[in-house]
Image (cartoon, rainbow, N blue to C red):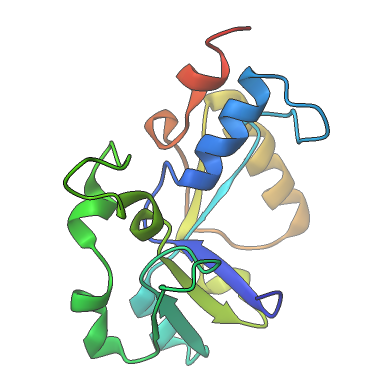
Length: 162
């Protein structure tokens, strides 16, 4: 999958949770920077389609053998579990052990994702927003917005034991 730029369909992804837990638990050999400095690149399926970028969507974790894929726009409504994408909690339950895999559904854009296709960026706090805006201004690149979205992060998890 190294040929694709991956986008989760929802914030507070399982990958972000893993990063937060690794920081909280000081897991050796893992990234210890936490989620606070990470920046979300925000876009939409319609933006990808409007720019003619080649893409494929998974219905769950791409490492799972039961995950399926589509590159048909009309299949997306039934392919991605949109209710689960909107849910704050996505852990496995007795009734549905497959929730974590499905929560990892992705839009995979082939080879490259030009910055002008992005809608904007989301960050954890005002200090990060200021730094990101300065970097963008210095680069001369256009980005529609940089928004502070702390609820998209697992700050409470990674700071639990610090």
